Length: 155
Image 1 (cartoon, rainbow, N blue to C red):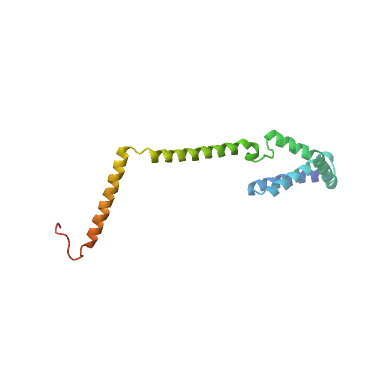
Image 2: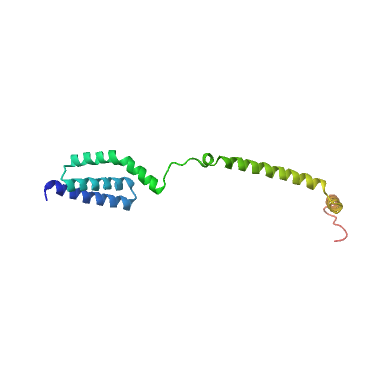
């Protein structure tokens, strides 16, 4: 094993350790750097390149295959730039507006109908409640007119 291959193997190990440390500490930067070092070491060990040449090969690979690979992975897992819901479903806003207008008109109709159609029984009940409230108000006023030192005789 020559020196360049040995350096590549050491770089791979260092990259794996760095990647695992990034996972342990939840540090994404360490995980990415570790993965990068591991790939750089793999190229160095496999082909016997120096660090600089391996770095140039890795950069060339990312320029040639990075964007198409990313697009393929994104397509495979279904990650796409999504439009807002309103632009994907323009009829949804119209439907909500129509439902709001219908509900408002139904409420107006209900209020008007209930004001017109009071049955005689309902009118009588409302009048008796009004009279009872009036009696209670008069009783409270008459009770307040008693002097504090002279309680009513019924006590």
